[in-house]
Image (cartoon, rainbow, N blue to C red; front, top):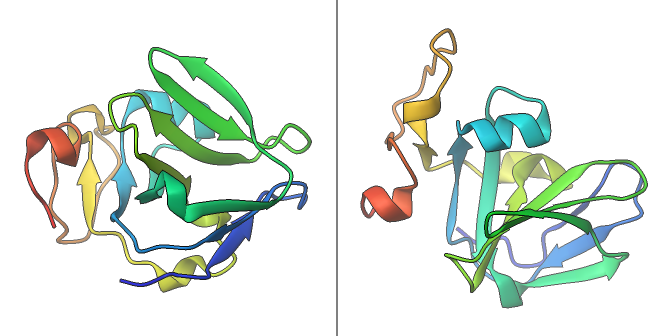
Length: 139
C-alpha cells in the first residue's frame, strides 16, 4: 500500500508532515495507554520507517514514559505519533492526522486483551491479544 507523498498534521496546523515511504502496518489499538493518551476507547495507527517521515512545519512535543514517546502538538494538543524503544526504526502516526485518512485501510487489531468489553468490533480483521509484532506475522 503506497502513501508516498501523503501529508498530515495537527488540528491547528502548527505541526505538519509528509510521508516519503511505504506503510509497514496500519491498524487499531485497544490498549489502555492509547485510550488515556487519546481519550478514545480505540485508536488507529499507521506505521512507517522513521526515516520516511519529514516534518514540514513545526515539531511535535513529546511525552515519554517506559520506553515510549507519544508526540503531540504543543499548541492544540492533537495526538500525532508513537515511538517505542523496542521498535527503534519505526514511528506510528495517528491515521486521523492524515489529510486523506480514508486512503488507508487498517490491517489488524492489536492489544485486544485490553479491549473494553462493551466495545464491539464488526470487521473480520485479524486480532492479536498483544502487539502484532509480538504475537505473530499478520502481513
